Image (cartoon, rainbow, N blue to C red; front, side):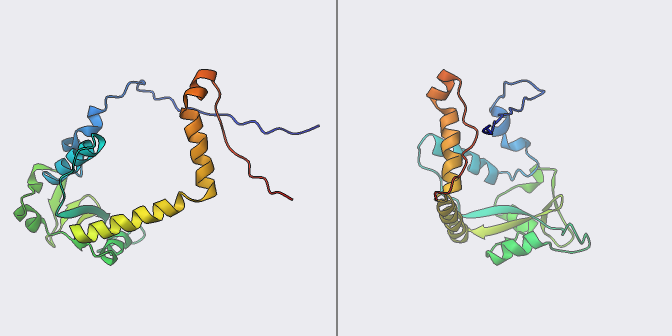
Length: 184
């Protein structure tokens, strides 16, 4: 008797209903790590990119990095801060960020620590020039492009594309997974 694999597709259901208002996610002012002036530009550029409009170039990039090492709570800078410093990011000074025109005081979750750094909980604000951020962005994109050439990714992508296709919706069919078979 032949054994057959059965794939069961499980779909999570939200206890809060199925209708989601996308404006909730677009309201950047209600996120705890909101940087007035910078977060607005990022959101506006995302909308422009979706509408195939030219984006407004940024002069630098802010990034929140975990400041405390979870294994050593007394450590001043954690591994993530060091990671970003190796990528030529610098820890942002609270007063310098305000001097650049970003009113951090508008967001109560961001505060100035005794060393003068801009902090948000266990995170410290890092900053890089546009040139450094662009080089890092390109490197990450190139690595992602290489990863997408892997056979496993291509098969998973084919399953997802089929499940979103009109044919799958029309017939009620769903693909679950591929099984790799070695030829002998």
